[in-house]
Image 1 (tube, one colour):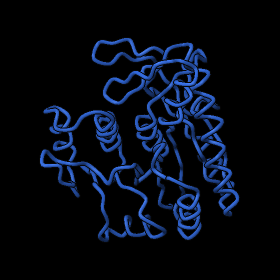
Image 2 (image 1 turned 90 degrees about the vertical axis):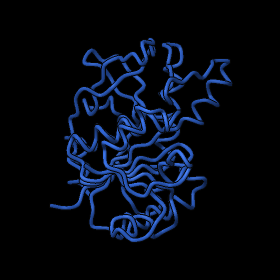
Image 3 (image 1 turned 30 degrees about the vertical axis):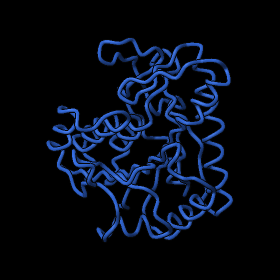
Image 4 (image 1 turned 45 degrees about the vertical axis):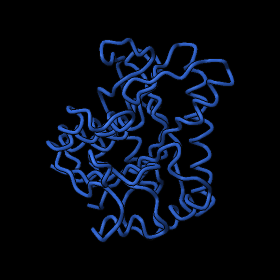
Length: 259
């Protein structure tokens, strides 16, 4: 069985097209089966601002009202998704574009956070990995937007970190890599933590040592590890050898979380 890897790409993880060209080269040279699930927070915030809509977050999770959903879905499932898939395809990595709402890939339910109504925001309650497996059988890389749907077909905005963890578990991935604009988890002294066990990660959340978007990220990582993912990594893209260096456990700026 081939090594299965989900790459979660944050909206600011790759600053230009060169990074995606390097990623394409790394994917082509690997024997692993890859999924790419992306965010797009900065572009959503910009689009909402242009529409005179506020951006409100709770623990890094965007409150999404009904009138925001068309904008959020357009940015994630059309603009960002197409851009990533196009660059990879142009660099000889065949892709299959998907959203969580397609073919029941990611089924979600509305959530509250800290007692607050988050609007049209969901958490994943079921994964149907068949669309991913079909893409792999056709030698394609699934490029997935986190926009998901309820069992009744209502579209929901799902935090990309949360969606990545659920999909990695559902598709039986051994590794989950979060590419971000930060090199990993920082401790109370703002020092990079190279390795974390999930109980230590839960301690960082519980004590408030971490904050903002890292809260939702670490929560999702804990769930991923408990759900069967062997290793989860938070890192920045550091050039063409990033994936190889990461999987061979060589020296690289990152945090790896495991059981």
